Length: 564
View (cartoon, rainbow, N blue to C red):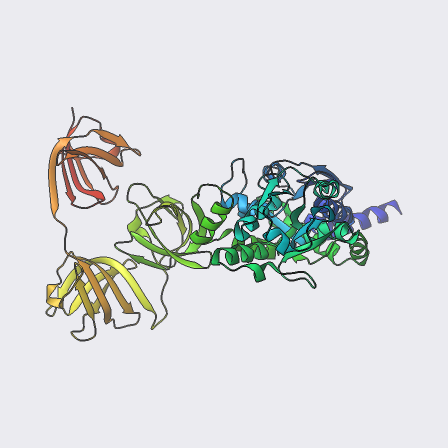
């Protein structure tokens, strides 16, 4: 009998999914990035209690880690072991914190292993009965400065109160630091007149007859909508952004790097909780709306929320009175121009053009350092750029992939040098995606420009750098050919004054002034004492002959030096 039971138990254990065995009899810690009390705590504890059974865990324990507008709790979760035994919840104000690169943020929302979300989180403005106001118009027209409660600096409550105040020019003084339902208590005591927060969280306060909803960001029956008061483009942008982010409510995440099979078990258990009748009944009794989504959908929503246009980031920065940071986005390269110096990409829903600096932009392709001429249309890149720079100069371009192959008939844009000319310059040979290609310049249909002026094909010359536009296909006829004539080649003999970036950047004297040029690892011919050398052999004080094309950014064609 004992042998039969043992065999049966082993067979059942072998039939269990690996992730299910992973949680069997274990303790799961659920981090809640706020104080006990309030709806974040209520959602977290309700979900965690029901997750215990769905996971087969021995127990789920709750760990409240308030502070810095949920940043402390999120930092702790991000740094936890990715074993599935630690999960957590925090508010969507961290989206703004990451966009604005708030001090203290040690996480990347894109890297969390998203388990799911429990609800949308409609934002509302609630006014207490002690406010002496009866409508949002009274708040709009208030000549006296009135106090508003908010959670910690950096929280959704704090950020969105500031943003709505900027959108509608509200005469309010924001007092941060209220946790849980402390803001409602402050309204009851008359310390503050109102607060911006989750409609669901504020609903019990309103239902108790202690105040009313003056405004909602979105749509709710019987409550004025913020968009109806948004008369400027700035106000409309702010209202629409807050409304979009409200779809990401009551999130649950695991640390980055959680193994896929364990993450899927967490997601399965989470969605089983969201559909459990007992759970739904408890949620309704507690006044906690449920509008669930699985973690893979949440990951897509979070990525979209973080991808904002430079104009939107400027609006958020101005509303929160912080300096515009660099912007980080992920996008395919849509177009390349000016020898790959100009890159077109998507930032939010806007098509943006940025500039690759030959000396200041760090370019990485497929894990290896690269030059900008290795970039190709269709590559997917993690991009960090400076929106305050007039050309949106890139700090970092980290790309993967290869040049996109175009469908027949699709318009291609290629920036490269003319490598050959034939048949009275009608036939032009150039490099396209690493392949020597030949195209035809039509005397009637091809628009030719050289140095910014209309030109004829007989003005073309081998070596010219050109932007070629043409439809892909077996036979190429250019739509346009836009070229610059070869730059003047400069020759300077002088000492190396300084070296930076592992000798890639060389400071030297030319035309009576200090200049900086770049030594390319692949294109610059470097000689020291008559022998070929690597750039790490260069040293300050060496006498060198520098050959380069004149221009704003210098890349040496040749550097010929003598050691000291």
